[in-house]
Image 1: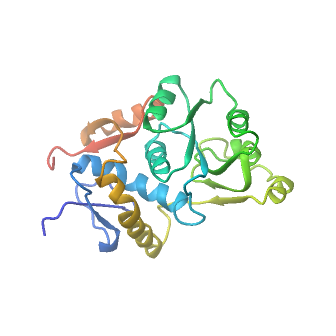
Image 2: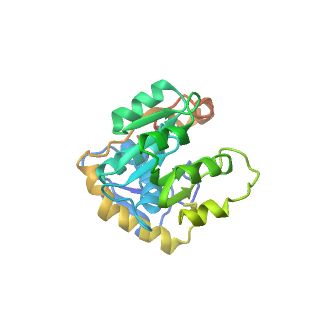
Length: 250
């Protein structure tokens, strides 16, 4: 009783109170505040489940993180660096690129001014990257296959681009022995979520507790101002998480 915990919920987290399975609870790591814990829990589960479990990212490998200024992106940069990986990111402004570099990215690409696939191939001497964490989807599919290294893995976790499915270049996929995976977190069965949470507790939470990975919080809104928080997110100006808090429980 009285332990500070955070959790991965299946939805409904705007509620004043939620019920979560015990095996989806995580202790608040180290001396983090509850707000800081709220900023990293789902991001940690997303990043670890997609880059740390099946065909995991490891020291000496390279990764491209699309949307480096997002809540998931800012966490993924720090986690990948802690794993000893070479980190490339894309972002939509020079300011966001600078923030990504400060978090540990080796190269930040302003996708509004540069062709990220060309930059990746130049920076890697034509080899490409070992892993890609993608929030865009179909619009970038061909470019991603081109800038993956042989035996590389593309993990699609979002569809921010076109919703029209595009043909998959099977020749390139086979020639380079590539893997393409598409995942979601919310729709996973409970047993899978519990496994992910256990892995985060064992392998990621110590890094957060030691402040080797730090929560990146753009802004905090009262729950009554949730509409303003959504408008800020829609503006594309944020770096890191936008949080909602209920003053009754703060």
